[in-house]
Image 1: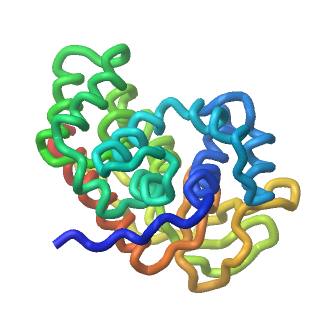
Image 2: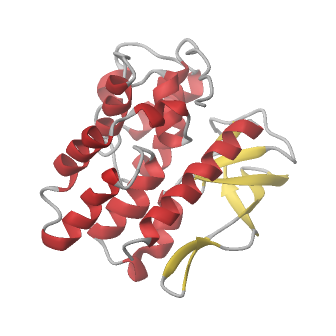
Image 3: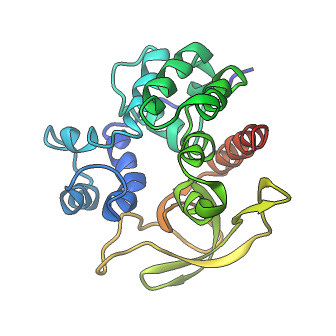
Length: 249
């Protein structure tokens, strides 16, 4: 039985996307050259017509957002439910047909992959992959580069979760499971205590957080506080796509 998905909250989708997209954009891995402007939008919790052209420059995420929205009868790829599905995971992912995901991934990798490697990636749609960010990290990004050389990068790029242990000024001390490669397979290792950024120059996008909270982390940047249900969903979709990735390692 598919669980109910919460109704959209006004303006929440674009602002949630900023929380996850900010740090890789800051590091110049994706998106346009608009990092400070995007950050200001997030700080002000502001959405206006000027924001959407900036978000559409995230060419890696946008095809997946459009796919999730289209397959769920939604017109806005930045609908909060769509953004949550892509970064965290929810029932909208289950409604995306394998053929539609295949076509989206084919368009995404056609210029970067060929031969058997491309076939492996495309086969994941029929094997049950979902248009979740961590699927892209484990099975698309990992094929563009060699896993042994990019394990740290994959661990940073995936959306992970951690439990807040303590506050430390601009950082949070969190317990988080790192991505490991053991006996040729990807897995999550035992929890480790790390420091994750929540502020830059004294300003950040996440405010209401306390020890004991679950938070999501992307490129060592604390994105948002997770409900127990969201944490469980992110853990479930991560484990699912790790298992899928390991089939062709």
